Figure 1 (cartoon, rainbow, N blue to C red):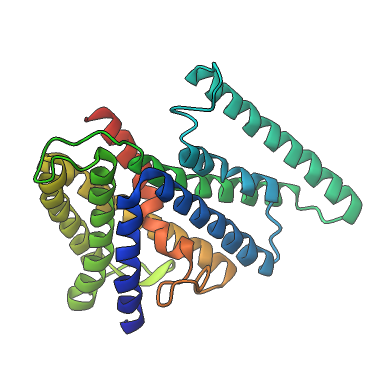
Figure 2 (spheres, rainbow, N blue to C red):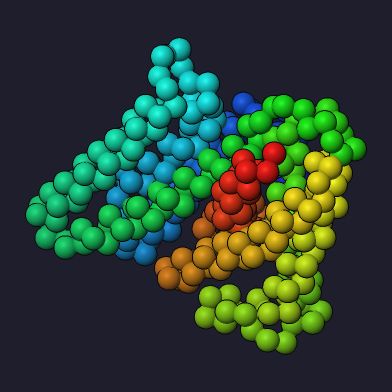
Length: 287
């Protein structure tokens, strides 16, 4: 537990510093974390005898890369509409799937290892999971002033990202504390034996309250903050259980060890990966 707190003391200011520095440095950092996640995932699966298709895994980095370069919004110096860029993205994804399928068939014919569906399935699963990192960068992408709350000149992207992240942190922290203090009933014993129903409820309630508080401070919209808190309180915990299920499937404790007390990049960002895409959608509807 002490190691976890020491890592948080170092990691939280670093994360906040990158967030405040600008969307380009933050986008670079998110892409590098996604790249680390690809290495962690492929390493864990390879040790378990799972040869996930690397092309499909790597395709999961395309959206974080786009979020870094902001290509979907401003793009390179080309006269492309947003629709044509999205068409190109869909074409690239389809081509990658076709190439990956051909490669797996050729590999099976050469080696006799009949794991075509398994390799493609795990590659696609991992690629989709890694692609969710893009939502974290897109939350930070908006540079307009909020003009609300107690920090009227804060970038909208910073405000939205901070509200979302604080809700996720509140969910994780208070679920742990509530489970330790009041936990009696197991939430998902086959996936994560330490999690309890009482802890999950405590994490959800704390997330809603923290969302209301920081929604008021940063956005001037406590109700919107509460909605983000409710999303984090549910999807954040589902994201954690999803990660736990993948780890138990291959018999590992953590995906990595780069963050002492927390594990790897996927272990640390599991909850946020499930919350950020829905938060992006909500913020795009409620301005």
